[in-house]
Amino acid sequence: MENLGALQIIIGIGSLIAITPFVMRFIPAIFHFLICKIQPIQKVTIQHKHDGEIIKSITIDLKSSTPLVTQIALAAKKSGGTNNG
Image 1 (cartoon, rainbow, N blue to C red):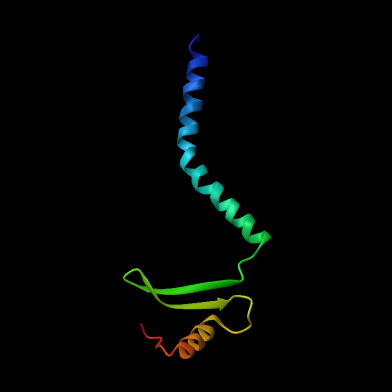
Image 2: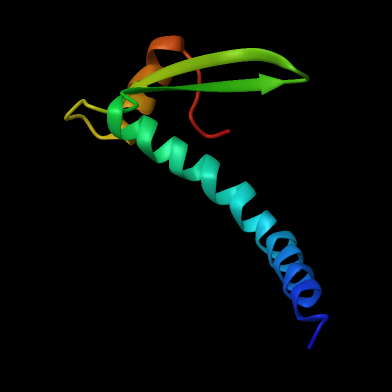
């Protein structure tokens, strides 16, 4: 009975160690969620890279009424490239 306090401390430290990976993933996810609620992402830039060099870059407007696939196809036509990889 006299070692009950030490046992509680050991169990507490073990619990903190066990929950650390969860906290390390959960807290950044919460911050990302809050930042996106305050200032939503409105544009996305898609970059085609080859050997570390940017070959083509397309910016897509997420607030547009035009579907994303249509925006990508229009951007590919404007740049003169093909959209089949």
